[in-house]
Image (cartoon, rainbow, N blue to C red; front, side, top):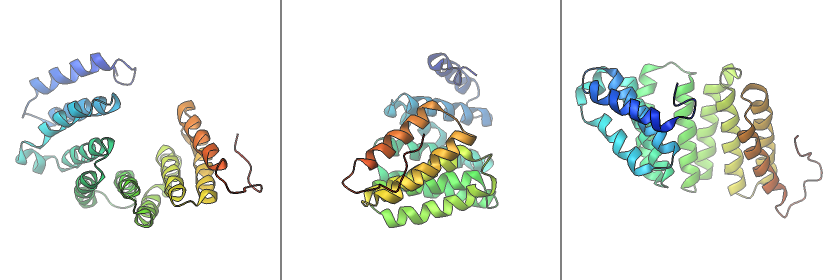
Length: 219
């Protein structure tokens, strides 16, 4: 509740206390560690995020008892490495998370899509755009069965697909995908900040030295 209300410092205190109380006794320890690492990533305190999430890997028995939470630990650790530009390590950690989640969930599932979309993002960071687009296509299949529920993820996916095309100089496809993503975002996951990011990036592609007279900037 405090985290969602923006009271991050209080949330950090509460999660830290909970982690100490619950240490090695239940799944709540892992959940507290996850929330701490998420907050630190949000605050761009990546060293603290890395130090927090590393605590989740100390007990092998806990990994076996809570495989989904272990997959989440790997997912958050990958996000932390991504935030510092360490795409190769992020990719390795996310691959591990995906392998575990594929044993737990039947496709299509949002959590599988989240792993695949993240892997596509890392490949974009590494300059492997064709591979990134292939991963994004796999992620799309995990989301498209329920756009209403997965609206935020699908809009983010289309944004990332657009970015991959942008990197290759295919600005028309960049604009097309981001425009589609913006429409989904506005319908299923309205957020002024996200909408501004879409419009800014679409505008950047319009400024590239290519004529798009047949396209209309979305409103």
